[in-house]
Image (cartoon, rainbow, N blue to C red; front, top):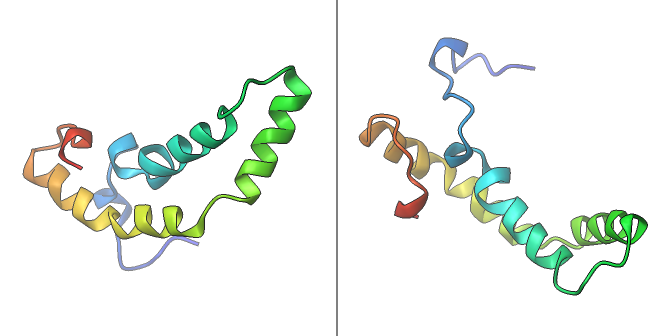
Length: 86
């Protein structure tokens, strides 16, 4: 369901700088998955599932908490990239 307090016309574009999964979660997951060498595709699939299940909730919470500041920063830099600012 779309929240009724944010009109679709003002939603931010699909930017990795504004997507918590892109700017925080995938990186943490990737570090965990590739901590040791992967032997085959099945090993990779199992490792991704296991690492996802064990992903620290604090990483997710912190990335979501940072979203509003990132949004304000993107507005301040007129839509430019902000990754280097965080």
